[in-house]
Image (cartoon, rainbow, N blue to C red; front, side, top):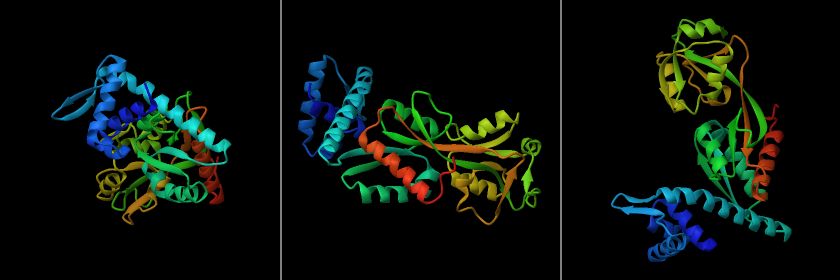
Length: 293
């Protein structure tokens, strides 16, 4: 078995196509097919189902993916370490993020990172909190922005306390208030983010014994804003998501201050490229006075 065959296998998994895998690796489809066939022969079982709907992993292929991903990650880390010893910077760092960080922080952080580490390629992956945490644990990404609490198996580097606020329409009866009580929250129709995006809100409800009247669950911040704007309900949102809020929406403080705690997480023993990226995150946030832990 060779690293090159593992790279072919992983390219097929990522792209879902022999042709696209060939384009990624700059080789022919027949070359990709030949490498997969040889790997399957060495392992003694099929890795992919091939059909009209495309190519999909078999159950055995799913089991092998875990190990092959780890092998490729370790190989990349070894190359990065060897390059560092020789005074070079090479490699890829795969970053997981959610929307508010992606729009407000990452363009600036990536620009700074590329200015100082031009030999390291950055790849971005967007997802909800639970997906990002799973991707870090499974080695799909090297590090990711998350909110605490997270699995104890991961390292978490805290960055910012993001205040939780209530938003409602300027047509709402409470629109002239400065604060909203937890008792009032329970009486209002609530527009909630879908599962995977709502950790800190559910934690807020649990800590304050709030039983929300959930009217809608949606996954997109802009949809939440539009529904609130049209007075279909109220919502609880982190302050960072409210940077471009409509003038028709009022922002109220909660009865007691509550926060989501944003940080960046990775597996222990991170690669040199990952460490450099995390250091860059701290540098940019510190220079812009955004770290408040």
